[in-house]
Image 1 (cartoon, rainbow, N blue to C red):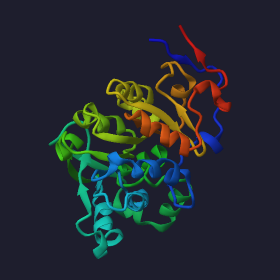
Image 2 (spheres, one colour; image 1 turned 90 degrees about the vertical axis):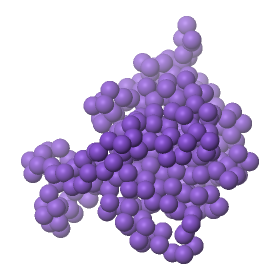
Image 3 (cartoon, one colour; image 1 turned 30 degrees about the horizontal axis):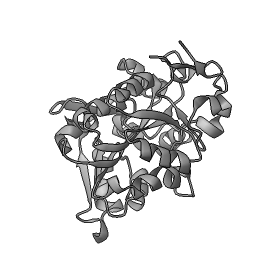
Amino acid sequence: MACAADRSFSWEPAHYAHLGPLNNGGHPFVDGLLGPIARSAEAKEALVVDVGANRGKVALLLARAFPKAPLHLFDCVSEHTEYLRGTLFAADRWHGRVQVHHAVVSDKPGETVPIKGPPAGWMADPQRRASLQTAGLLGGPFSWGRRQSPAALLEKGTHVLERVVSTTLDAQFGVGRRIAFLKIDAEGVDGRVLRGAHGLLHKRQVLAVYWESFPQQQQQLNDSLASDVEWLRGRGYRSFLVGKSKLLPLTPLCRTSVVFASSQVMNAIAFADVELERQVLRSYKALTKPRDLRLASGIEKAA
């Protein structure tokens, strides 16, 4: 099968850098991505699932974009799930609609997974915590909500903070449930989360999958963005790199594309339904053909 060889794609943070914490200030994530999906007929009575909900910033956007959909939030960090249940979604209006699950979502159910992090006393030091926040090193759920600096934390050692049982999305929902929007942010194990939803995705019960590519972490698991895109394509999904103003088609690209070789942390989205894909592309003001993208002008057909 022919693929597109991208020879001149250049990274411009204003367009394709990792979006980071999403906010509601008119970001195209809300209007361009979530809006068309929420309005589609297929989304009616469907679930919304957030894997790696952390402290719920994106979950709030999902709850507002899908005002009637049941919302399932997963996180492996008890500190996060307690906050989601007891504070962020504690109001009566969320009762019966938002379910919070303390679990590791992966490709195998029933495994006991150690959640590691720095010693509590070391992390409690306000100066150390402030320095990590300034460096942008807090935020990854599989290190107890903190994206650790190897140099800083290996020096102090890491501790098993809690042990959490794993599950899969297939085990949680079965292949009969429809999911309007599946968001995954699992610090490098997103591919395992996808594979644990094999039944749902094979039946195309998920309208849209939004996940993070974290190359540094994925390499340790023999996974990659290219592998995830190819795996999803085998189940009928077309994938796009998510930028702040554009969506770049990933499915047609060769595995040797410079996009896949990048070490950038990136976000991607995939659709199974062609009409829904068109609506999102239209609303996101994206160009649908790789050769039309200003930042990917060198993409051409390969034999």
